[in-house]
Length: 245
Image (cartoon, rainbow, N blue to C red; front, side, top):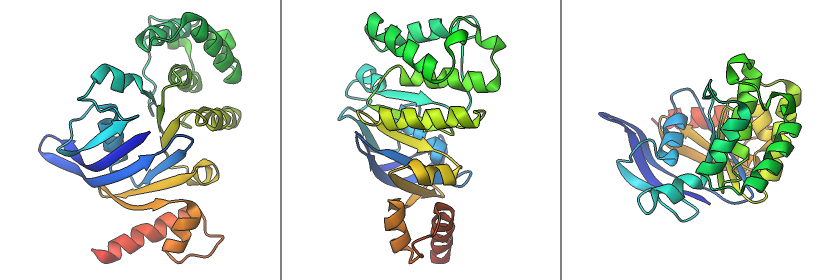
C-alpha cells in the first residue's frame, strides 16, 4: 500500500532523510520509531506530499503525487500530533466538508459519522464548535475526520496525546478494525503501546532507517533475550548504530 523507495529529502538547504526505504502493507499497523530529530515528521511530510524529495519516490496504492495529485491525496488520511480545526465549523460540518473532498456518498458519510462518534463518545459534540472543545475532544475530532474517509493509507503522528485511557483503548480497537482494509503508519514515543499493537517497526536514526521487522525479528537481529521489550530493542539498535560511527 505504501512504498518508500530510496527517499532522500528534507528542507531547502538541509537534507534530513538519507536513502530511506520501507513498505507498509494492507492489514498492517507499522510503528515509525525514532528519537526527537530522527526524521519521523520529515518522512511523514514527504509521504503526505508536503515536501518535494531530493531523489527517490513515494507510492501509495501504486499512485505517486506526480502521476495524479488528486487521486494520490485522496488515498491518504492523517491524524496530526496537534489538532487543526476550523473554529467557525461544527464537528459535523468538518465531517461534511471532508466527505465532499473525498467524494464519500452522503448516506455512507452519515452512517460512518454516527458510528465513529458513538465509538469515540463524541455524539453530543457533533454540533459543537471546536472553540469549546477540551484538548482531548479536539484530538478525538481529528480522529473522526481521518477515520471517516476509509482511505487506503492512514498516517498517525503521536495519536495518544491528550486522550484518556478509555479513548486510547477505543482508538486502538478502531485501528485494528481499520487495518483490515487499509494500511496504517504510526509515529509514537509510547513504545509499550506500540509493542502491543504494531505488527512491524521501522527504526529511524539521524535520518536513516537502521532496522525494520517484527519485535521477534529485531530481538534476533540484536541478540537480545526473548523477553526484551521494545524499549530494550530500540536502545540496543541506537547503541549499535553509534558504535559503527
